[in-house]
Length: 227
Image (cartoon, rainbow, N blue to C red):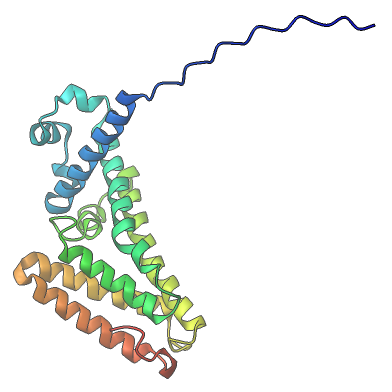
């Protein structure tokens, strides 16, 4: 006959692991530092983004900044990455809500112009600014990151054009890389005019030029999917 085993005493409940408030505060501080760094970089270039500059602007000790970034290069790489995340949230993600077709191409371009108009970065487009700063320099981690992210935007436009061709909205004979290059160049021109004092007039001229170029590239099926 089996012998009944004595009941085991109940184990005391383990206390829930406390939320690491310091880690959360550290992440928020890092995000705030990088958001400010990206704003400075767009207006003055990444060379102006230093640990000392950020410490002075934000009232943080330089030693405190070293806890987040061990070097100026590390700070610049993190700034470029933060700017890319902001750009994705402000420009690419909203446009991707549009169905594939010429309407999405237009949405990408219009969202990009809107991001200038709303002053997401005070110096216009962050990536146009820093690409001009770094494109003639020797290859290095920061330059490579900047140009790779600029190239990804060009690729996003090209892919949207190709998808519009597949949807029958853009002429199948059009060169998608050429059309994407033209659209990007028109946006770059609007960015230059916007920064040089033309303000919203430059953005409206950019919108008109982009719309006219898309009209010329569109098929009759596209109808009024943009504008």
